[in-house]
Image (cartoon, rainbow, N blue to C red; front, side, top):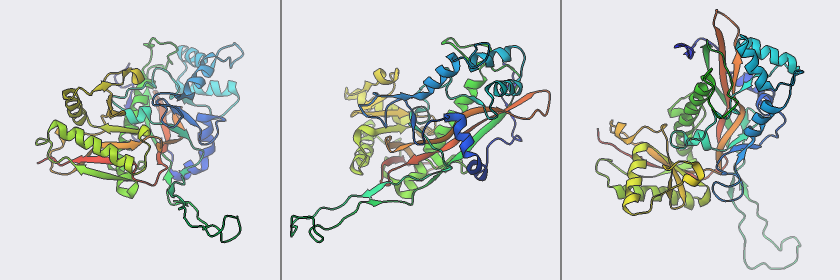
Length: 408
């Protein structure tokens, strides 16, 4: 790859404004999800929102779309869309010319290259980006997601005067719903000058001709991971994340472990259990909970569990041995949360989160796509963009955090 093949162009306009998202939401949705119904679970690699136990009944509709674009003939010569893309790229077409040729043959004006379906780039790596890689993704056809969480159940009474269904025999009750929750769909993106040909991998062996799609996809995942957890503390222009939901009343802070230099290993074990128990008490289903923390917390918890001979890796679900099974609940480490040892200014920081993964998910209007930009120089320029938001459909404290207060 050229040294400047991933040169970011800060002047290129990539991400659509809120007004543009509202106006173009139908075309954005169709470009990624075609005829899928609104609210479809299209990616759930762990099975958080499906029936069955943890790790069962996974949903990966993107694999089906890849197989369709890779294997289904779409051109008069019998080639599929993926095969045609690679053929044109090898012949010297740039991204803009290749996209135009495919659009012409498909008789459509809005086809762009989807990156989320490529097998070589959408890999689950729970050690680094567990929330971005494994959080459930649900389609949304709107520019605003408005869930209606149940906040209070109807109360039953004793001592009914009659047993028939006449007026006055029962005390009429209704469940309460919160209609004030809403989450704006926002976009993120990047632009680049591509000098190498973009060849899409079509086998398990990585094609050495191009790695741009993998680099940009993982870059998007890294940004998503930080926005999901840190929210507007990471990027004030992005969607709200765990920290915002906690401060807004959809979560809480269980406690503070204090100065980590003075904490014992058992303190981390006790704090983790407290955060899980509090989310459980607040109404989250225990089998839907997951814990995400920084690397130092994960290490200290693992050492504590090793001492008590209770550490069991979850390799059967994720194929890695570093995902903890703590009281039957997975504990992930994420690069999005700065390590405890790097916190040194005396402030209090959230270091661990317990999350109800059934009620917390990504609502996506458009998955990551590559779109050619107008040519302004000898080099070809392209944009990568994604539109969605984090959604919490429970108006309870189903996200619980634990903090540390390092001494400056």
